[in-house]
Length: 376
Image 1 (tube, rainbow, N blue to C red):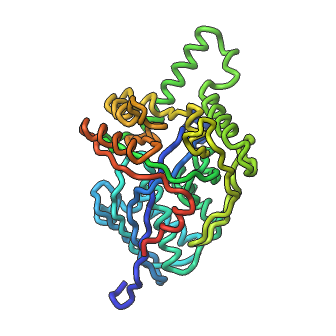
Image 2 (cartoon, rainbow, N blue to C red; image 1 turned 30 degrees about the horizontal axis):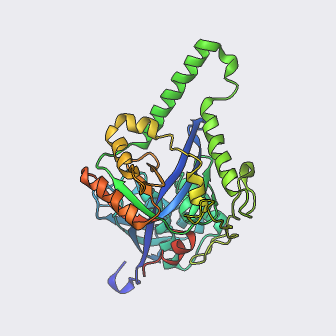
Image 3 (cartoon, rainbow, N blue to C red; image 1 turned 90 degrees about the vertical axis):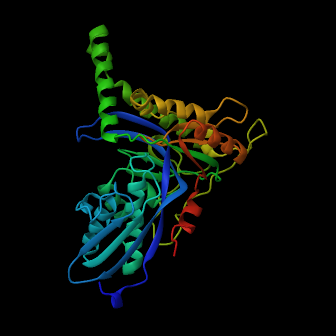
């Protein structure tokens, strides 16, 4: 692509996510695990810049400011989710093009915040804007699911229910932005290893039950109950919000047919006043009060005890403690949600005092997600 042919690049904010509860089922026949989770997009983001033009042959050059990111210079760009996404979108559109992708990495690698998956969606949206052509909503979701399990959530934004292996996504009723502290420990957590350790624990439990009482008791694997637990919590939280019903009776908004730059459609949730009168009720807070958990904490904290201590720092012990604190995904990032900015700043101070980086941010509702995604 010569200098004279270069178009103005498209810059996209590649927002992060946290997992509000993550229930992991036993391994499936296809090697994946059934999941039930609630994703929440956050204001923290990478920046993805895309330049593209149609050409006789497709070339994709990917650069990044972080050595841990697969990129063309390192000879492994094809491993990058953003590269995979652009390649698949071009194939689906039946277009050949010269594409340059630059990733300004600000989020941690292997942090459990969906950075790589968000980069993929940002690259897709940037490519579509550059070429002035776009996939239809269902095709977008299908391609995103092919690239990664938590990629589709970034085509919705806001509060999102994830089922299947996490790729079957539905927009949930929105909540106002909430103060949040993200703790970023230096340790890296392997998601593949975390799944293996969960599988090993489940197998041990099953063998113990077989030895104690026989296989007759195992009409359903114990981990499957974890999925039902989160589903019941979701159903109880949103059953009175006035939105349509989804899988297993879970209340949710209509899945949108996304068009570049447009906002997802969906019914607004009904906001209630907390019975205590001291906090405006919203679906997000109602959910965390159900006692949801992240199953990965069981194995990740045993391997990295310092992460458990960081969670305690996020939670606090005074009246200004977190409304909810947990590992995000398989980690190593952790987060806390707070009633006020003052409570969040106090938690940030606690975490930093013990030597862990902590960032003060906010949750990002769906409308804000789409209105601020393109950086120019």
